[in-house]
Structures are given as structure tokens and as C-alpha cells.
Amino acid sequence: MANSGMTRTYFLRKTLRLMLEFFNADEVNLLLRVYDDSTRFELIKYSPDDFRFNFFPQLNNASLHDYGTALDEHWNYILSGNINKSVSFVTKEGGLWIRMLDNQIIKNDFIREIQLDKYLAAGELKCLFITPFLLDNERIGLFELKSRSERFLCDFDIDFIETFVHTLGMTLLNQHTQAALQERVKELSCLYGMSQIAETPYVSLDDLIYSIMDLIPPAWQYPEITRTRIILDGIDYSLPDFESNDNKLASDIMIDNKKRGKIEIIYTRERPELDEGPFLKEERKLLDTVAKELAMIIKRRESEEDKNRLQNQLHHADRLATVGELAAGLAHEINEPLGSILGFAQLAGKYPGVPDQVKRDLEKIVRSSLHAREIVKKMTLFSRQVTAQKKQIDINQVIEDSLYFYKSRCQKEGIKLDIKLQPDLPFIIADPVHINQVVVNIVVNAMQAMPHGGVLNIKTLTSADEIMLIIKDTGVGMKEEVMEQIFYPFFTTKKAGQGLGLGLSVVHGIITAHGGSISVISEPGKGTEFKISLPINLPAASNTSE
Ligand code: ADP
Image 1 (cartoon, protein in one colour):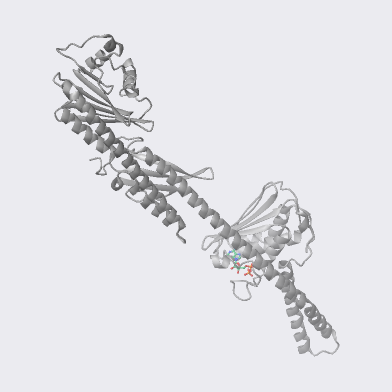
Image 2 (cartoon, rainbow, N blue to C red; image 1 turned 45 degrees about the horizontal axis):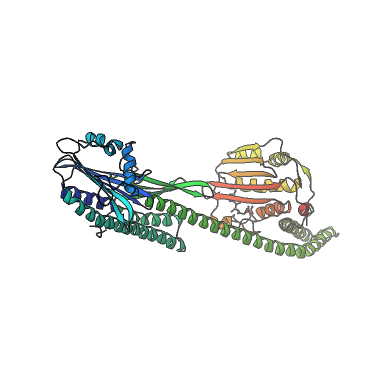
């Protein structure tokens, strides 16, 4: 039986039953002390077909019963081998063999001292045999047989049983080692499986969690009735057959000292009580390790994602800077010839006697040149070539001024303006004309994104060293591909004549020149939110505009 791979509890239950029947006893008791860990098993026969098996794990006190009497101490004498072997009831191996004849127990000092008479009377017992398990001369446990009948064993049997108990002790230890090994193999397979999953590239977090959940049941004692649930950041990853009950083992998923979720194991049917409910202490340790490993895998993934996002941002900023340089060069080169075209067209128009048709054509040249100059000006703003006229400003006031012309337009177009400006904001150093341009450009885009009306939220907030301006609309929103390009000059999704694609590039140029930052969140069909942060104390380097 010891080698058949059954669980330790099941093995002991069967062994005790075998002992009980073989010796025709009424009670068998077994105390095992392996590696400082004491466990007691008992099997009691109440009637020929009424047996009770009890199991008491992790006893603090290596005692057979917790009666709190001198008797308890006596088990410890036997276990420690300090028993006086000259006393008549003490066996060869230092156990006890006591029987009552004609309902009389021999009253001697020893029996009285350990109150054995009371113990026997309480259990209506007539015979008691108790012997230590010896392994390499070390006492690793106690074996006890009790009977309510006088006709139970004879002196001759005692030697035989003591020899037999040695074999039993060895078998138990062997079984214990095997079971511990089996637990260890299950634990390592589970953890190895987890590390393999964690190493697999391109696996989504959801798939990763489900794969880990599949690894857990085989590591538990009753895989077929084991169900697992992982809850992470409020998301419940259980399968439909998970139903919480009291046979539960749980461990928190802690990431950076914060509880982010938990792993739970349940048995769908009742199982005998073990170390923690129906679970082994090895299983508690394993679950804690699995929770820690999972936390580590998630943390590693998150820092990898952070790294990628930062790299993308850097890449984006790099490209914007390159495009900025290009725009600056282009604007510089175009400005001069454009000035000449405009100047000479205006001069030519003033020449006396110019035919009307030529005059009209010259006016067209002037208008087109002025339009081109406007574009060049925006390009220089984007590439931060314009000297900002910075002074102390109250940003709330600048925002109010910028919105002045748009309030009635919003009303006409069915757009509800919701303005929440935090009062008493600290002053910042900025160019009010440029900040006005920022607000107008974002607000105009937002209005264009809400052709059928909506809500436009504008709010300001402050933190210790920054002022935040948030402009949010409930418009058409943007797809990821659009969002990635909105700050590039000449990027537009609008029809020709409706948009030049310079509005947000100008916004970006101005905010960067002010030492601030701008970010956007958008979802198609839901809306868009621009968040601008401006430093309260402008860093020295940005104080003078390039
Ligand atoms: P333009 O408005 O001339 O197209 P912008 O640089 O201001 O140029 O904007 C670039 C693009 O960004 C727009 O064409 C539009 O696709 C997108 N966009 C900007 N703001 C919004 C918004 N609030 N909602 C949806 N899309 C927007």
C-alpha cells in the first residue's frame, strides 16, 4: 500500500483500519513526529460497522491526547525514552502494557502518579498497549492500541507487536518521504510550466493567466475537483465552473507592495480536513509561490510595456524635431523669394496705366502671397523660430479671452460649453498671443469634430509645479493611426480647403517652446481629450525662445 502512490491520509486511514481489525482492538492511535512536525491519527470503532477516523495535523505539543493531565506528560516520557524500565508495566522497548482483570486495576504509585486509572475508566477501557516507533534508535512516534475487552492480546503478543511496529514505522517514514517527493515534483512542474509560459513571446496577458490557471490543478491533491480563479485589477478570470465555497485556499497578488488581485483554489467537493481546511501545507506554500511568480511576470511585462511606450514617445519626439528642422529651413528659404514676389506685385500694381486685367491678376498674386506667408508663419511657429513675447500671465484670463468669440458659435451649433477654471491659479511666464493661438486651434478642431453638437469641457488645474489645461470634446474621436500623426505639419484628415494640417503642429511648437508638454487621449465615436502641462517656474533654458 505504501508504494501504491495513494495520499498519506488515505494510506494511514487504511493502515489503521488494518491494525484495528488485525488486533481486534477498539481504538488505534498513531502519533508521528517527523522533522519537528507532529501529527496524530486515530481510528475508533464504535460498533462493528461504525468507525471514525480523525486527523490532527501540526500539533504544538507532541502528545497523544491533550488532556492537560500528568498523562500527557507520560506520552512524552515514552517518546523521549526516559521511562523507567524496571516498572512492571513497561515493555522491552519502553512502552506500556496495562490490562484490567476482573475490573480491577493494580493500584500502585506509578499508575496513580500518571492518573492512568482515571484515563482507563473514562474510556471504559480494559487494556492499553502503547509503544514507540524506533528508527535508527530514534523515537519518531507512538503507536497505541486500546480495547474495551479484557480478552485482548496476551503477554506473548507484546514482543511480536513491538517488532512489527518497527516495520510499520519504517514504512510510514518511507511513505512520508515518497509523498513529500511527489509534492515537490508537482510543485516544480507547476513552477517550471509558469516560467515557460512567461518566456513565450507575444502572449497576451489574458492568455498567460488562463495558461497558468491550467497548470494549477495537477499540482493539487485532487486535480479533478480542483478549480482555480485569478482576479487581477478587478477582472475575474474564472471559468464558468468555478463556484466559491468554504473549501478554499487563497493568496494575494502583490505588485510593488500593492494588492492587485488574488489567486483562489477550491475543491468542488468536501475532502477530509488537513493542514489548512482540506489542503496540505505544501499546497499553501506552492500557492504563495505561484502568486509571487505571477506578480513578478506581470511586473516584468508592465515594465517592458513602459519601456516600449517611452521608446515610441522618444521616437515620435525625434521625428517631430527632424520635421521641425526641415520646416524651419523651408520657411527660411521661402520667406525671402516670397517677400520679393509680394513686394514687386504690390509695386507693379501701383504703376500708372496698368491695364485693369493686369491689375486684377496682380491683386491675385498679392492675395496668394499673403496666404503663403501665413503658412510660412505657422511653419516657423511649429519649428519654434518665432521669438515669444513672454510675460507674467493669468492663464485663466487668456483662456476666457480666447473663448470670447466662440461662445455664441458653440451655442448656435448645439455645443454645450462646460468651463471649469480653477480660481487663484499661480501666474506663469508665457506669450499670451501664443497661448491664445493654442486654445483657439484646439477649440476649433473640437468644434469641427462635433458637427451635430456635443459637450466641450475646458478646465484648468494646478499641481505643485505645473498648470494643466484640459480640453475635452464628445466628438468623432480619432483612430490610433490618426492620433500618431496629428502633430506633424500638413497632416490633415479634412477636405481640401477645410484644413491645412498646421493647427496642432503650431500648438505643439508653442507648448514645447514654453517648456511644457501636450498629450492626447481619443476614442473613435467617443471623443478626444487634449491635456497640456505648463511649468509654473519656467526652466532657465526655455526662458529665451530660440
Ligand atoms: P487641421 O485641423 O487643419 O486638419 P490640425 O493639425 O489642427 O489640422 O489637426 C490635424 C488632424 O487632427 C485633423 O485633421 C483631425 O483629423 C485631427 N483632430 C484634431 N483635433 C481633433 C478632435 N478634437 N477630434 C477629432 N480629430 C481631431
